[in-house]
Image (cartoon, rainbow, N blue to C red; front, side, top):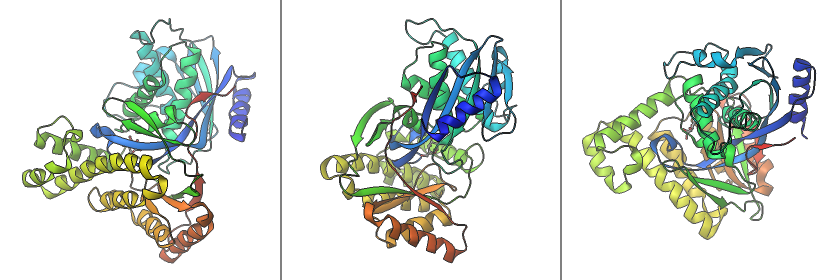
Length: 401
Ligand code: GLA
């Protein structure tokens, strides 16, 4: 048991007065490549990281759902049958509870609704009130999917306690429903799928249209390579602003091309796209279309030549996000440029953008040199010091105790 498990269990006992029924955890993620492609029915290649969120959970007899977090002063309590009044579907209104509580409560709401609709083959769901105590070491607001980690831990716990019998992909969908409709962030499904389905030493090649996955071994450690996360500490939120605007531009582009989603546009179609649409919409489309191709290329290169050969694809991905999709910020560009100048094989921002983290593919023995160079570049630019650490592909959501 880690310190995070201890923290969740201690919080549960302080709140409830006895041990939880169990501990469930789910990880954050890093996306190796494939950004803003998920909600375009495209391809992504993320992996789960070692940082995890733990939910200590136990049943209650009074039909209430109470959530507490080590990040919040006060627990939030709602009757199970009132959750649907909290989250009127897709109204766009801010949740009637603090945002952190909307993640676990949104999962409880979405899972209860799915079980009522008969989900979970061959099982009879047994909904009850629950106490949920949450602790996490996934950095918040860093683009590492701290929210998907909360959703994954909560969904796994309630799926077991309520006997809803859903598989990991269905639980990822529950997490996305919570995110989209309870929290109001119009995200895709990459983060929830990575948090549910992660495996040690592998990236998850996910087709976001079919939700089919293939594990792609990274073999980074054997190749003497490491992945350095460079958290700029520039905070972002996808429930507001730029993320939704980018998504709308993609939908506009797909409509102009007469296809259901940008997944159906290929690199060969880009010339026609440029003739049909305004410059901004075209550049948004070009990012998504070329990024889908880069994911496919990365999977091919990983399989044929190994992780040491994907650096140029990472660099091209960053340039596309900076110039065409326009979701980078100066801190992310500085991190990427400084890492590359210090010898990284490749680097790119990861996640939704507008802040958060970049990753660099480095030689494992260059961690100190690259980290020092990035720190120095931030200091020279007058930016706050970044948070730098390496990550390894890790297991997805599971019951730990
Ligand atoms: C956020 C969203 C994901 C995905 C990425 C961008 O992490 O939650 O669904 O869209 O941004 O690739």
